[in-house]
Length: 102
Image: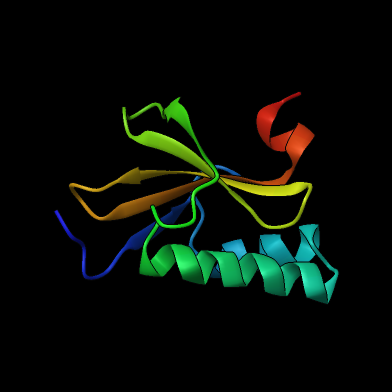
């Protein structure tokens, strides 16, 4: 199934809406260059969440495939994709250690 429009669900602190997510990003990534890079990666994911994946990481709690996309050498976005319903779940954004727990 090809999705014309992807719906993003932000789960970095429980489920939050887009406005709360942007506030969370600004608080956690106050450096303007890093914030811009994260927003650029999210925009690329909005076009095609599979195109720039770094690696497949198993499945999320809903059974959807999990992926990672590289923002910088150390910063990653951890997300999953429900391609049937055109939903991208953003689970975590942070350092390699924070995202992967190692």
